[in-house]
Image (tube, rainbow over all chains, first blue to last red):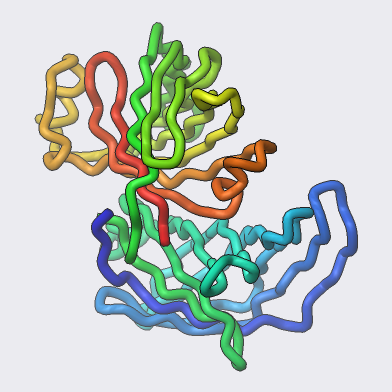
Length: 136
Length: 149
């Protein structure tokens, strides 16, 4: 698989909402209050209001389901979603990977509508960071 | 991004169902009749009954929403679901529509996929994400499936 960097995304999340044990596992949501993203082709901030709806499965894997709105430094709005998994028990190192997708109406960012991407997530002291690459 | 080959997968589609113009685009459902897959850690066949629910968007991009059941050669059932995009120069897309063989380097055909299985031997599939590169042949697509490391 060939890929190239698209952007690095930093998310600021509010205190989590622990909804408890549901039919699919333990559901915890992470409201997004802000953040920033930067890459060669786009940069800007994450608007408040998105969320990551996570479920801890019975096999220990955390499933992620995120929706957020990005705003570029030149004023375009981009709808971003990702699904992904975080397996802290993976051999060697945690496995935290996502499939981001984008939608925008802004012509100069329309290339985002036509690509698939993969993200590598890391949990840092100041919040999660996702290194997102375009699949070529 | 590091990846490694998980398997190659070929599916045979039969009798596309042209649903037509729907609110999000033009929808065609392609039932899957059969197929096979092979890789270092798993091999077997694709069971009949899956399908690829495709949507041609207004911007010319074809969205692919595939679900199939895989059966390994040692009897495990694996649920596989993928989401993909296919687009390219009009002449390449037209040639594909005519059933001609087109060099897959001429168009973008990528999918992201996930697995679910209850079989312990294949439980590693529950814990990985994969990306495929597709080659659309007249008899059905061939996917090179890479595990994201």
